Image: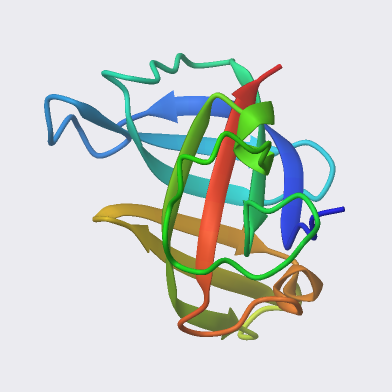
Length: 145
């Protein structure tokens, strides 16, 4: 079975908190239900529209292969089943920054990734960052629930 680095169900709080910047992209601000994570994620809303109060499941995985074997970096249209078959929206990108804020009693970790210029910020408990590495390639998979 494929290894997930992170998985949770999120509720969309609002769209474009800093105003609409691009025609086909919205910044989604959401909070997770189980792990109390905060996320900002740029989504191509022309292909995957999102609305406030919608729930979606989000997974971060290092590979789309169901058996967990590492990704080769090449997409093949071989017709075999992948993790992406279970989701509606998939992006491939790279984790470019992990920072920890220990200035308050509640330490928080921030994980930043870029998916071809669409950015993600995931903020929450430091234990969630244990399986992430800097410059790691990731797949972000989403489906509405």
